[in-house]
Image 1 (tube, helix red, strand yellow):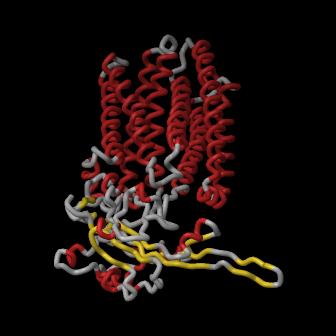
Image 2: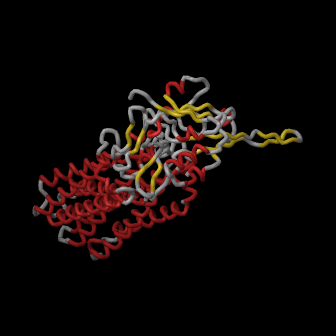
Image 3: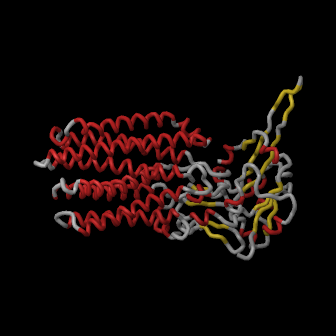
Length: 294
Length: 206
């Protein structure tokens, strides 16, 4: 495959991370509805909204870097009738607007309102549809290595891996910042959420590795994997290191013992490991490109 | 669409001289990395020992390939800016003024026909010398072929002749895009499915 694919790697991974973060933050808020006070809920939701907006914006900006003629970028939504790429670009724009709307509704009111909740669910639904459209952009009938369910799995795996991990990291830091007397309840709920998210992440990554090995039937991918064996080992190391760091709050009560700075540093590093692993995985996805024919 | 123009490639007489490739390169001022017409060199066969003697089944053939101006062009479907269109005579053209240079058509085309122009940041490809066709002249690759291995015409006429196919190793299934090209296979092409066969000029085709 010709050209520099890093802008597309960043665009797809960051956008999918944003979708997952928005969606899972809502689920966590629902689960912890009785245990988060207004300050905590607002700080958590506000931080999530800001991060989702930044991720989508950075993703969009980097995607422009792979265009030969960015001046014509506005024309990229003209073929909605038959091009999934046009649909993807339009949906990213709408998702960004929904995220901005969600953020503005949060920051303009004192706490979460019915309006912000409605905007949140619309944004989450749009986000999931956007990821579905993204999978179709790559599921070209002339590219057999991409035209498979593993592409769908790979993209949604990024959503449900990075989103929940980022959400629990933010929530933990918010708890450290806004420590109050509901501490014991919050800590036990948060520990449960951490356990579930890390277990789910582990399961997703095991499935991911299995699908990668299964794709070994493709000659081209085998070659790509052989060429990037070091990247695969690095990825495995990053996943293990990242999930180990993420497990620390299960054994050490961060809310009681760690400062916000320490919690941010540990969980931020853990997340960075997993994020780099996902970027490597997406780079391998692009490396597996092989057309039917010439 | 009233008619559909296309190419006829007689692989059985093509010597791989690449006069078609050079003529196209010359007319359209193309760089080596952006050839619209390329000659694919295919080799196959093996050596085996029978008694005291070595026997060989080595064979080779050439296919001259450019954009096939498909009847169901996937590049037109996937282009997000609607910069690729199909004329009434079936010629598929790229409008470089509106192309965004995303290279999605390059990914999708099973013949690898769209080529990226590094200087302009847009996609380019064979335009079937529409300027010459509109003046009742043949495409320059067809004119340049000394062995008359390339022909041009309406695809229904080209398809009506005998021993013609659109599928030959290493080309993709015709059902993917319905290419407007017909090929008379080299007599050795049928052996490509029985013995190890490969494209041997990969570097040149990049």
